[in-house]
Amino acid sequence: MEEYPNQVEAFHQAMRRLIDVHDIDMGLKDPAAFTPESCSFAGQFCDLPRTFLRRTKVGRPMAFPPISAELQLGRTLKLILDQFVICPHHAKTNKAALQMMMKRAEYRNDCTDNYSNVSGDLALSREKV
Image (tube, rainbow, N blue to C red):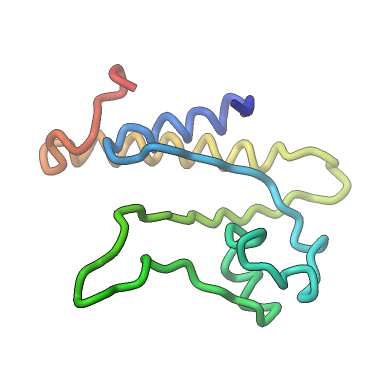
């Protein structure tokens, strides 16, 4: 299992409070490293930010499995959250991205706490994660 910075792990824990979240994977990608030609295989690049894919005209939307005879095949839904952060080139660190992840974790936890009377047993308390 990959080791994540504390700020990223805090976001993972906030998301894991939702009982049906089973797997979270994150990483940093520099859009400058990709050209339209490098995106020829959807499987390798399906997690790239949608805006980047659309800008390079190689967008392939994530979708549910095919429907056959009005029956949805499969039960897995992949949710992609694109996070865009401008990290100054002269900084040579990902500090801005980590600060944003911590803010997102705090916001996600606050939202889950504030709506606990509505979500009921669909979300866990902070202590149970």
